[in-house]
Amino acid sequence: MMSGQPFPIHTSALAIGPYRLGNRVFVAPMAGVTDRPYRQLCKKLGAAYAVSEMAASNALLWASDKTTRRINHDGEASPKAVQIAGADPSMMAQAARFNVERGAQIIDINMGCPAKKVCKLAAGSALMQTPTLIREILESVIESVKHAQIPVTLKMRTGWDTEHRNAPEIARMAEDLGISMVTIHGRTRADKYQGSAEYDTIALVKQQLHIPVVANGDIDSPEKAKAVIDYTKADAVMIGRAAQGRPWIFRQIAHYLETGETIPDPTESEIAGWLRGHLMDHYQFYGELTGVRTARKHIGWYLKGLPGVKIFRDFLNQLESTDEQLRAIDDFFAGRHALQFQ
Image 1 (cartoon, one colour):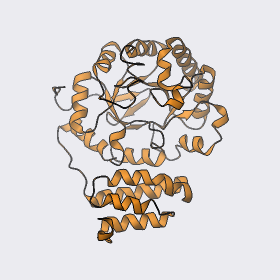
Image 2 (tube, one colour):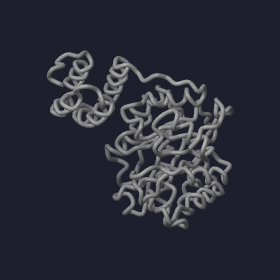
Image 3 (spheres, rainbow, N blue to C red):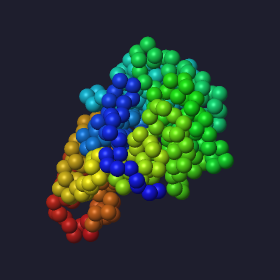
Image 4 (tube, rainbow, N blue to C red):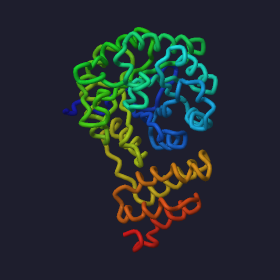
């Protein structure tokens, strides 16, 4: 892909329904990752838009701690977007209304998750095999929140497998039914997260639609983000795995797309400050026991590549309190116990 568009690459503001966004760099919904503390930090560090990790459409699960946390947007900057997943049109409509009643300002339909436990229920990217069911789900969800004037968006893959890349057909149908924005991950369901993302399908979808199209998949740097937009003409990019432990990537990409200038990677001192702030929010959100355990993956992502981190992670995983975790992080960045971690 060759970069060719001048800076800035877009001059007009992007909007989802009534919500005007500050830039064109979004946070992808990721199960077990994009909780409220993570979304808030990403928005603070340059992301214009973030979608929650997917919430089940099964009403029997709504009272669970996991679902309650997933749909918690208290104090989060607008727009507040909730992603729902399922394969039953009436249940999906009910889930959309349930989340809107609890503050969701945008409803996103998951048709991109390749996880086996999701696809075996004919949900996620498995839906791409059944366009008729997709139509019924889209119609049902859009109608269910029309009275509240809630935009409905769609996230999907390029198709079920390489022989069935039907994203263009589904995207056209979605636009005709009233979907406000489409995000496409440049892999099929069969690809899962293997190989490289392809952007030809995203480019084709963009050529055919009038609503915003967002490119997702393997975008891990400002230069790659611009190259993908240049190639696909997408309206925005959505960053997932590349932002794990690197939430500052959003401001780096947004600044580059606007000016063509690069922002250097943060210092260890800056990383330490952001990590500590993230952990404090994380602990408050999850509580002591769950907070300690679920924080470990985030800490590992932040520290990846730093000297002594492998031994430090082994030590960290033995700690069972938030105070111990914070003290260990402070010691690690301060260089104390350096011999222990190298």
